Amino acid sequence: MLTGAGGPVAAAPAFERVAVPEHVYSGGWAHFVGGGLAVFDCNDDRLPDLFAAGGESPAALWVNRSAPGGEIVFEPLDSETPAITDATGAYPLDIDSDGLLDLVVLRAGGNRVLRGLGDCTFAPTDAFALDPGDRWTTAFSATWEAGRSLPTLAFGNYVDRDDPDGPFRACDDNQLFRPEGARYGAAETLTPGYCALSILFTDWGRRGRADLRISNDRHYYVRGGEEQMWAMEDTPRLYTAEDGWNSFSIWGMGIAQRDLTGDGLPEVYLTSMADQKLQMLENGGSAPSYRDATYDRGTTAHRPHVGDDGRPSTGWHVAFGDVDNDGRDDIFVAKGNVEQMPGLAMKDPNNLLMQQADGTFAEAAADAGIASFERSRGAALVDLNADGLLDLTVVNRRAPLEVYRNVTAPVGNWLSVALRQPAPNTRAVGAWIEVEADGRRHTREITVGGGHAGGSAAPEHFGLGDAQSVRLRVVWPDGETSAWVEVETGQALEIGRDGGALTVAAY
Image 1: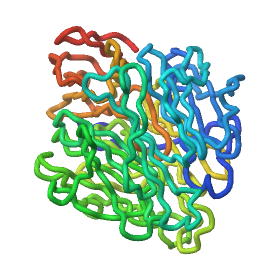
Image 2: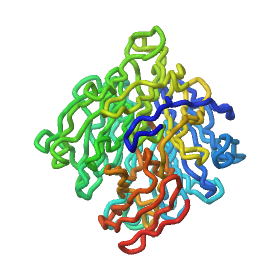
Image 3: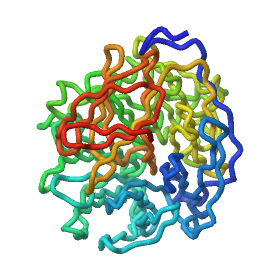
Image 4: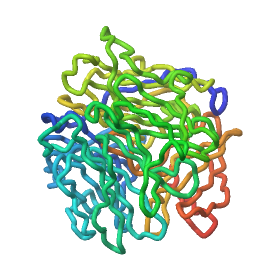
């Protein structure tokens, strides 16, 4: 029995493993990191498909053949696209605003932009004069800056493999590509680089501009580095203590954000070796000043929660999502040793941190059936079979990719929302969706980036407890705020822009 939006559900979360074609993220040192997963609908059938990096193995592109509400079924696509090797990750976005999602594929040696042609076919393109370089790229993010017809693209690079004094203290610089009309100019260098493993454009304080957050791997910069936030001014600059930025260093690997408190501002979860971080923005977003709430909220996840390996954990991809639709977002963390690092746990199960009624989190992965002991890397919490429940996909290093169907019961109500607007920026990257249910406002920023080496372009999923209907509005990327509309829960919607009003259609 549900006790209202934000109330508990009687049953614990439960997942069942799904049989899928085999795919393994493999390779040597250049693929100790990465293993990202892109989740997006590439054939317009309203079911999310998968593109998984393979490292030294070919990448995999799987088409979703699931029956809505039924069993989850994927089949490989007979295409040249998966033949890409040395891929570390991938992110979907509609770069040219033609309504079809494209793919940015990250590689250890020459990133690729694949233009979506429809029906899950892609072709390499140089139409934008984007120089992919020859770096070891491990992170990506994109945003539309005001007045631009193309997105601004940021590439996070890891160790400079050509540095003869490396690999330690040999972190490469990061790159920013800003459009010049219908093409891209030369890359701007974001330096110093401290071995980025996750980056995210976000309007963290809702001030009308997306800045670039970078999470860095202390293992290779060793000392003198830190986590970073770039203010995206005409000439980007790093935030400093004078701006309110609190300097800190971790073995940063993944970034995710979600408004957990209902104040309209996102909290940030950062994965790392040992000390996973949950940070809350102070001072109402007037400055980029974050305080640590990890222990207060019970989100440390710093050691294996099952098994007999008591050494510190290694966190990679992190995703927020309400897996039981009780109106409270939960957290999934993919875990796994880098390779054979003896000071860290070798049997390091993934985490599912379920948010409780008091805002703290409790571990549930083992009981839910998803506490895999493989070396997990990229992942996604996405509804794969259109039944209103978030399913789970996990890429593993040197072990097969895993897909789990969410079979939790009973569960609360839900709403799925996809935004559309005229070109440019057809998917409304940078918009904020606000949903009001039973006295609480759920707020979601549309972003491209974060996670670990992969991300999703699926509709936004809201768990809503007992709510039978909700109020919804959109703050569009240019700042225009729509009127509120009332919609029933338990459905997937496509929300469009019609002046100050919204168009509402079934997705």
